[in-house]
Image 1 (tube, rainbow, N blue to C red):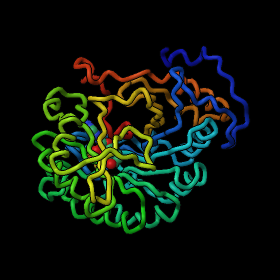
Image 2: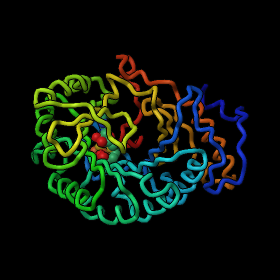
Image 3: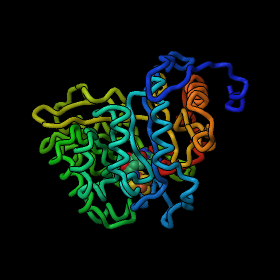
Image 4: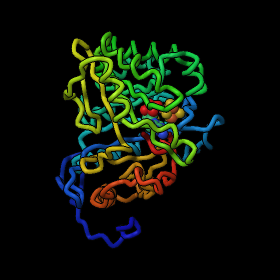
Length: 350
Ligand code: SAM
Ligand code: SF4
């Protein structure tokens, strides 16, 4: 079904919502329970990762294009009333947006402590870690593709390695658990650091997660792809690695531990083993579009509705329509679809 069919949908939702759970219909037409919302609160970023943004940045959305915090919170209240129970704040870089801590506090008030998490590049985390923890954020993902300062500069085009590392340590000291480190593995760029990054789990209780590089938009990136199988084989040569679970994660990562380590190793394979069958996610972009699949260019606009006088039941109806019609799966591992992604991650909210 195409989103243009929305007007002809006959779904009914009670009113008023006011954040109360009025409906438990958060199952899509393939039977998946959709309970996870990722919200990109900004398209702006203080890094320029080579796989995500051009050096000059991307044309910035104007302030009026971006959903206000009030608009996002209204959306979240409705989403929670429909059964969304986990929220992740992302971007762009979420910590560059003004009043981020207050906003996170409001989210926690709606979704409950422990149900709101954050993905950050860590540059400003030293400054925010404790206050984010104090308002009820407990889980944090930090991107760290390398442990080498000069390489960090090459990958992110900014010389902020030390700030990021200090941010990671600040999160650890603030008692975030788990602190998850996300590493995008790229051949010829950082794949020689798989072992040294994995070794962090012997020193810290971090979840070190290796993510298959998703070649966005241009074919030249495809040769940098390293499969999760190759990553795992490299890790197995380091020592005995046993499968384990992460009690805080029902997401797409497969977890392992080395004997004697404090942390865990996560492997995320969006390309080689797509996890569409169990995908429980929706994504709200900073400009108010809802994406039900990261790799589909189908978006449903909510900005206009959020700015209209229409009551929450109309919002809920549109949200349910999108949820029910979440695509069955992406086709990114089929060569022909590799070029299909219309927005970089910074604009979708990875
Ligand atoms: N700025 C924050 C950060 O970097 O963590 C949050 C947003 S960023 C878009 C979210 C995640 O998407 C990061 O972990 C980043 O490494 C990942 N990402 C971006 N582009 C990617 C790509 N082409 N392949 C795999 N992961 C990607
Ligand atoms: Fe910024 Fe995150 Fe994209 Fe890097 S991956 S440019 S930190 S939004």
